[in-house]
Image (cartoon, rainbow, N blue to C red; front, side, top):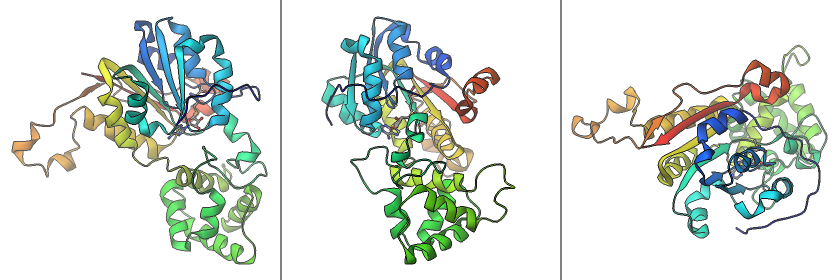
Amino acid sequence: MKTVFENQIQLPTHVPVLLEEVLTALGPERGGWFVDGTLGLGGHTEALLRSSPAVRVLAIDRDQEAAAQALERIAPFRDRVRYVHADYRQLPQILQEQGISSVAGILADLGISSWQLGKPDRGFSFQTAGPLDMRMDPSQGPTAADLVNSLAAEDLANVIFDYGEERASRRIARRIVDARTKQPIETTDQLADLIRKAVPGFGKQRIDPATRTFQALRIAVNRELDDLDLFVSQAIEYLEPAGRLAIITFHSLEDRLIKHAMRQAAGIVETTESRYLPPSLQHQIKPRVTLVTRKPIIATEAEIDRNPRARSAKLRVCEKI
Ligand SMILES: C[S@@+](CC[C@H](N)C(=O)[O-])C[C@H]1O[C@@H](n2cnc3c(N)ncnc32)[C@H](O)[C@@H]1O
């Protein structure tokens, strides 16, 4: 993990979602340290920094190329920002290394940015031809091509089903495994073609049949759902009293995990779980937060018109007791 400031490479093309709602949720006017766990192109961080000269931001992102642009964008506030190239799930270690013991607010805006999606060489999009990569941090771990060319058919089908909620997962996995015996699958368009051939009725569907499989592979490559509940719990640990945690998700799998983790921290145990706790333990579930949002905040029609990506965004917020 190193702290870097790099030069601008390209113009940013990512519009931050639910910006006003995030600012209202985090209340940066009070000043202090805020963590942006997903700096991206810096839209939310910039707004936090602008909202008060007393705000300092610890910005984290595992994509250094994106962060380099964000840092250029927020250069005027440089003395109030620290950037760490890391996974936000390493928060306790990062805060320790930075000598920060508690923070006023923490934001995580999950997934990838429009800028990452729009860069063919990163391999996230089935709409443009590029290497089948999909790593948010290109210096780490296997690529989507590695998974697609090495997983057993059953494991591949499970990934596509579990993370893409794709009913045709087995058919798609079989088609991929057949194809790769002839030639490795190395590009996004190669994979998208295979999926479209495996799913009947392509052309009649509202969304491209490759959408769900691409989502599934991206989640698997980046281990996006791993330890999200642990992150929520650890983030709460580092909040000051009345400090707030705000998390934006973009699909139901993520949202379910965040909802559950925040409810647990609020001491709201699902009935199915509390049934199994002995009565002597039930009163010991001590709430660490209150839920600021019982139902997630979603974008207004006006925002969705301006930024269609906001359509699936859900913001959940809790406050440290
Ligand atoms: C939706 S974008 C954030 C956009 C940002 N809020 C803005 O306004 O520009 C998500 C960013 O989080 C990063 N990211 C996703 N998961 C991460 C993780 N586990 N650790 C660190 N960064 C992550 C991605 O690389 C991407 O740049």
